[in-house]
Length: 160
Picture 1 (spheres, rainbow, N blue to C red):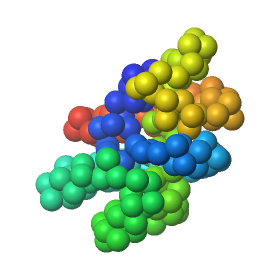
Picture 2: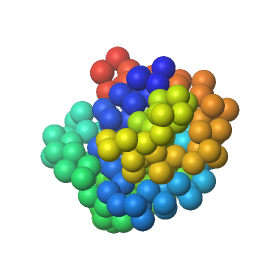
Picture 3: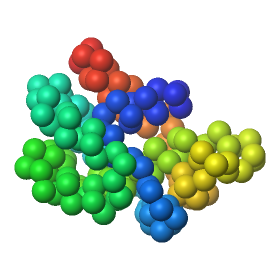
Picture 4: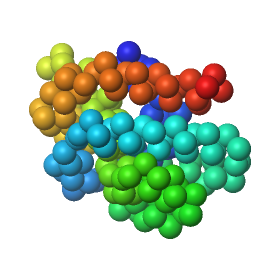
């Protein structure tokens, strides 16, 4: 289930990278709620459908992946299509980017967290962005998050 979740997030919009320690700290401090997770997924599903119809948007969104979180938020707000989709789901661009980033960081760090191996060179920022509260939240809502991730994968693969 974790693999499908990571695939679901990575298939959709590529803006889930925190690039600095300060950003990892901001992601760790961001409170995850099931309401935001659900809305964020609904927005990702709509964004994925829009990308399938609009190659220009797809190319533009893929270029956001290496940018800092504040820049990603600005781009979400500044793009009429992404701003409208996020707004239609009742969240802000900040909620979209931070929720998505927190979930992706957690999925990358979770194996090391659960095996108590600690961070390594490849997952240090994600590990630091995944506090015990995020891990607890994920475990409490794993089934719901998994269903949302599966729906996103189905849309991305053209099955829905």
